[in-house]
Length: 271
Image (cartoon, rainbow, N blue to C red):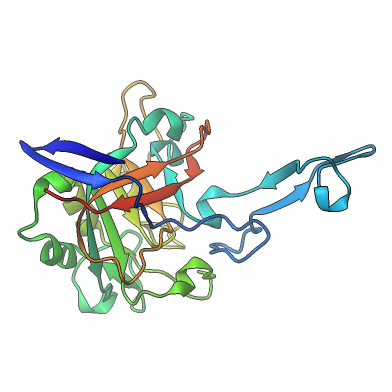
């Protein structure tokens, strides 16, 4: 099916039968990315008395229970409830599912090669996604496609789909980079790393606080008036997908939680 959408008085079209998947499906009991060495997402047949929820074991149907930590087991979309005292949920925060988006690719910089900052202090071996990198990639791009910003970090390969990030510490955002993103009025930020913040940051989540406009060190968020912006982490954008403008689709289960596993697709657009 083809759909048309109007953006800044220009009509675009896309074919919804040709999604470009950029999320990592949850392979229960199989290969999957992992951060903090948490238990893998897993599933098992439900058993009760003589009932066995597995047709391979003689059951009449498959009837499984699942265990998952969305923040650590794969692609997930989160809201401000991730850092708030109030239990704000992603299913109430993500109001729409289609967004104009721009995809860019960046080579994170060695932290000792940039004056850009982080709290707590950055380490010399850290890799940063900096404001300078983002400015270079976004210069001259159509601001109307900045509602969603999809960032692919380089180098890029299939190992991101099953990487143990405790063995390969990922890059993170400088404070200046996150302030720049907020200045662009990005509403949906998508990244192929486990977090916008450093893996071990003393629990400060400084970049998250900037993005959701929450005072540093505070977890106080007004339940009735808060940021509706989302962050989607641990996506994977294949090499053959070119940087540029797309229509983005974010799908989540109806979870009353701060984050949920998500399916994310891009659609090529035509004028």
